[in-house]
Image 1 (tube, rainbow, N blue to C red):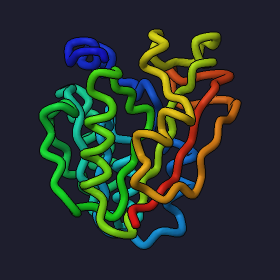
Image 2 (cartoon, rainbow, N blue to C red):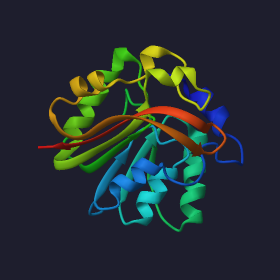
Image 3 (cartoon, helix red, strand yellow):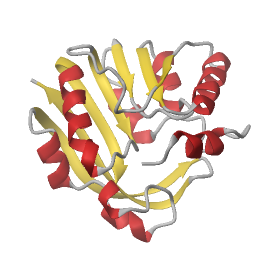
Image 4 (cartoon, rainbow, N blue to C red):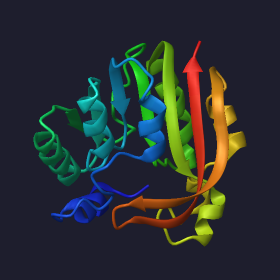
Length: 200
C-alpha cells in the first residue's frame, strides 16, 4: 500500500494521470441505478466521483492524498458539480453503518493484513439493497505494464472476493482481459476482476 507521499507526487501534475473519464465498468454498472448516496474509497483524482455526481448521486469520497483532493475539486468545478471529498486512508476512515446505497471500489487495493477488515466494514456500510461495484487487478496483471500493484499479495482473486464478501449476494464475479485507456498510468492490456454484489 503506497503512502500519501507517493500519491501526492503522482497527482501533483496538471495532467489527470488516470484521465478525467470514469472507469468504464463503474460507469456501466451505475447507469440503471437510482441515484442516492454513494461512497468511493481511495478515489484519487476524482474521475468516478465527479461522474457519479453529475448523474445526481450524493457522493462521498476519500483518499489519503491532498493533491488528489485538489484535482477532484478542479474536476468537480469543471463539471459544475460537488463531491464531499475527505482526506483519510482506509484504516482511519469512519465507515458508518447502513449509510450508502452504492459503494465503488475501483482499483482500491489493500494489503492482506488489512484487506479483509476493510472489506467487512464496507459491507456493513451498505444499506439493505445497496450495491457494491468493484474492479481491480488480478494476479496475472503482474505480467502486464498497464498499471497496478507490483506485489502479488496486493492483487485479488475470485476466491478471495467470495470470502471477503460472503455476506453479500453476488450478481457478477468475473475475470477479464481488457484494454485499459485511462490516462498515462492505465494503458494497454490488463487482467482485471469485476464484482457486483448486493446487501440482502
